[in-house]
Length: 547
Image 1: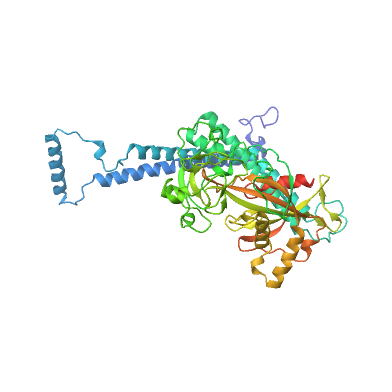
Image 2: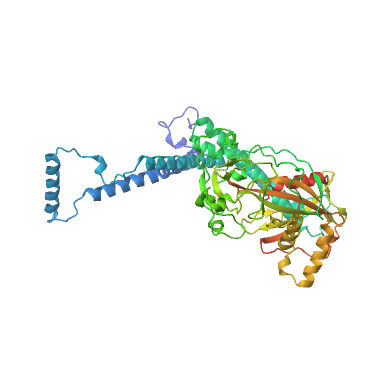
C-alpha cells in the first residue's frame, strides 16, 4: 500500500516504504497505556485480596491458635523414647473405659468450659451485647466512608471554620477594607464553642435514635437491651408558673407549690452506670416508670455508698441493714417534719407512698434500691440561688432575637466537672434563706478563703441583693443520684441585679466545692447539670429574656 502506482514490493523493493514513522509511535503509546492499566489493575487486585484477608485475619488466627493448643494438648507429654510410657498410659485408660462400658463424654474434654445454666445465659447475653456493639461500629464505619457522610463532615468543618473566623472579625464587609483592631470577646468565643458542642450533642442523639429504630426494625437487639436503650429518648417538658418570695422569712413547706418539673418520666435518674461507680441500674422502660404500672420482672439493684453507710451526721441509719422493725428505723417519720432527726421529710410533690417501711420515689422507678449517694430516706432538700444580671458591652445591654440576654453565676462542679447553678443541701434546723446565702457565698465567692474584713464586705453585698427573691421552681429534680427510696428536691430562687452594680466591687472566686466560677449566658445551648437548664428556662421567661 505504501508503493507508488503501478509498482509493488516484489517488482521494485527499493521504491517502496515498508512502514511509516507514525505506526511505531502509536504502537508504543498503546503498549505504554496498556502496561499502566494492567499494573493498576494488578495493584487493585492486590488491595482487594489484602482487604479480604485482613477482614478474616482475626478469625483465621483464632482457628490456627485453637488447632495449635489442641495439638499440644493431645500430644504425649514425654519425648521419645519415653513416649512409650505415655502410649501405655493411654492404652490402660482406654481399656478401663471399655471395661466400664462408658463412651467418651465430651464434657470431660478439658478444652470445654463447664458452666451452669445461669452462667451460660449471662455469657450468651454478654455475647449478644458485644455483637450488637460490633454491629453499631461496622454501621458507623460504613456511614463514615460513604460519600454523603464525607460531604456532610466537610460542610460541618466549613461551618466551624466560618464560626471561628466570625469570632475573630474576619469575613465582615468592612474587614476587607480595613484591618480589625477590636480584640475578640473571650466570653463570646466560649459561648460560640459551647453552642457548637450542644449542636453536636443534639446530632449525636438524633443519630442514636436512628440507629435504635434501625435495630428495632431488624430485631438485632434483645428485649432487655431495648429497654435499657429506650431511656435515652427525648421527653417534652411542660412549663411551670412563677411566684414571688420574700427571703426575710423562712420558706414554709406547706405553702403553695410553684409547680412540678413535670417529666412524663425522669431520664437522668435512670441513667446508668450510677455516678462514681460501675453499678448498672436495672433497665426501666418509659412506660413502666410509674409505680401504678405492673412490672413483675422489676428487680432493682441495691446500692448505698460506703460514705453514707459510715453514718455521717447528714445521713440516716440504714433501714435495709437494720430492718424495718429496728428502733432506729421506726423513729424515722415520713411526709412530715421528723422531730427525731430534725429533718423535713415533706415532699414538694405531695405525699409519697411508704412500702415495707421505705419511701417510694414520687416520679417512679429508677432501677436502684437504697440511697446511693444521698443521705436521707425520702426527699433530700436543696436550695439553688440563681443570681442574674443583664449582659452588657460598650454599647449597653446585649440583645439577640429582639430580646435581652441574661447572665447567671455558674460554677463547675468538682465531682463531675459539669457547669451548674451554685447550691447545696438544706441542713437540719437551717432555713432556706440561710442556705441560699451561705451556698452562694461559699461556692461562687470563695468566702472560706476571705479575711474577716472581706467576708464582712461580701455579707453586706449579699444582704443587698438577697433582700428579695423570686421562686422560679420548687419540686422534684431529675438527678442522676436519685434512687427508688431517696431523691433530690430543690427550691430555686432568682436574685436579679438589674443595674449590674452589686458585683462590680468584687470578682467571682470558686470555693471548695467548685473547680471554677464565671458569668454564663442563660441559653438552651449550654449543657448543665441535672435539671438546671429547665430551671433557667423559667428564669428567662420571668425576665422576658432570650433563651
